[in-house]
Length: 204
Image (tube, rainbow, N blue to C red; front, side):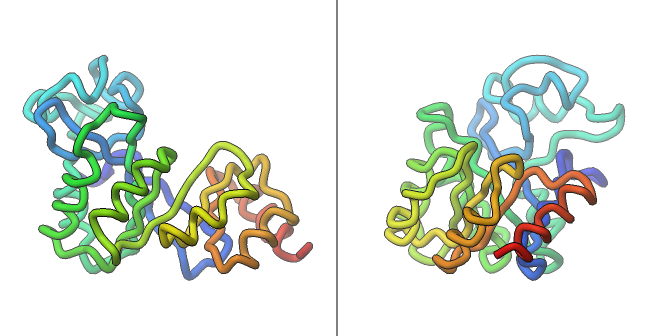
């Protein structure tokens, strides 16, 4: 399991908050697995929705010919005590009933609670997660600027806001940081992306 699949280094504006991001969704039989896309088409040698295959079936698929799709439990056990971990809940409305409960159960079983922050594009999923735990670290991510979101984040104890790098400005960065919130630009794929973030901070 050398690849841990779509292991994405998420470089945050404040380097001390660097984390590795893992997207979690459910197999047909309700096991949290790590996969970025809602389908297995791009990452594996098969096709179809992740949710339409049991864990046993998903394990038969191959990534780059030799790797298999890891469960969230396998991933967290491998990373226990090593790095900060960002778990993105790939919830979308009612696509994965019980996803939040099952992810929290895996986090508790693997004793990785203190390493993890949970984020999601589905903010109702974040509400449900907060209802399950008063102490788990939470964040939001989005595809747009949301200058109105801060009261919501305060109410549900969210400490990170993911923002597409293409729309991140010095003004918005300053607004987020003034609220005491961690800035989570995405994706940061190149040195130029990283340098652009540094420039935004200097322009504050």
